Image (cartoon, rainbow, N blue to C red; front, side, top):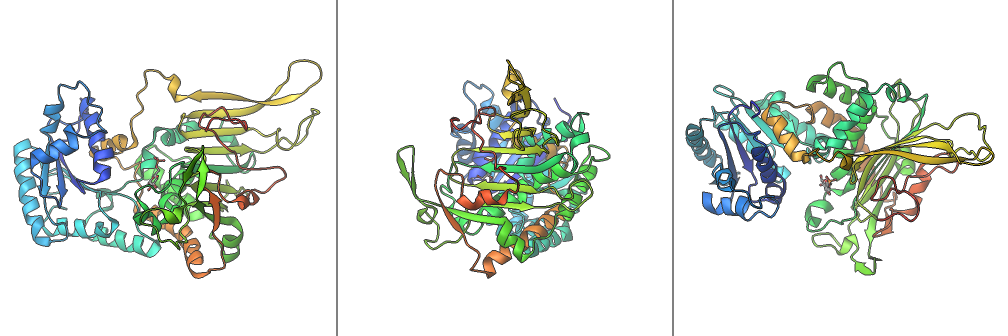
Length: 505
Ligand code: BG6
């Protein structure tokens, strides 16, 4: 049993998809692993007029995302779950919520320690915390209070600043947990360990040895049922401003003094502050946006983005974005960073690729700029692992060089349980550890970099948005972003080590 404080988790947006798909399963797994404190309660809050039993049925017994087969303790877990129906925009309702929590608190003896999880539309991100504060639920008089805010944190720099300001009027920064589920991924955290626990990588991790850094986050799915949300967001806001810049933060940061929240988040902030602002010309030349078009994938016709439910038929929202940019600091001066993210690409894959500089003198006959390069691939998902590419002699006469792979896959750790990102992040918040949550200043710094790009797209209709057939790797001109003779994006496969042309997608 982990020594966590007794506490309540209040989930706003209890009947939403995230609650069923991620939050309840994460808590259930923590329960199974005996990570929950002795006294614990979950209170789902929503508009629907459910009673406890109806909600328990929905959230627990009939929840297909819970791996509950043969679990005899399911009833016991369900008893931790409560439901409170209210109108979150009505100030009066919060008094009743407070009373309800006090009564559950009294019942479970949770010492008034509470996490409020906002799994609600962003328009409520400042409304709910304000109302909670108006009835004193922000106070840490008898216990602690933490608020978890889902992404997107702001729509642009201004709205992110306003949201931070509004939250900080009633809460201290250490009560605010801005969630970015990428930081909860085991492989993302392993970036820090790869860099800072191995003496072979860190000495090379700079402009002297690294030619370029490439990050891909590809999804094979389209916008599915989220067209309404996505059309007002786009890939830049949905993936780049948060998840992918967070990855950049970990890849590019200086070694922190300690492995605590303060030190790690300080170093990440410095990276975001060093991102070279993009000029209008940079935006035109170094950013490519695209939108998927109808096509046929594996013999099946698929819709184009503009035909998706909830999407404006004349939409100019990007479902793909690729950009090249620089980090102006001592370590990274002159090293290009490339990011690419999109929906309806050939496969689902996220990875960080470190391309090392080619050696300067090609001793062997068949060595070229390209095959004299070493590559380190950190696979975030799927087939999680790490791959190093290096040159080896082809057996036989002469000195022919061939690039070969050396790889490690998490799947080889047969007894290792890899927790879901939400499980890790919720546990951290329960323990008051904000290391893997985004701090307010760094969210704003990330927006500062992204904002001019979004503005340029909005204000300059001459900046094109290119179509790409669903199931391909994005607009054709994306390859032009990568400088260097014969240099190209890595086209990854589902399996980490199979990266030939005939890979399985
Ligand atoms: C979410 C985005 O934050 O991340 C989605 O809103 C995206 O559009 C998802 O599909 C990707 O997450 P993962 O963990 O599947 O890579």
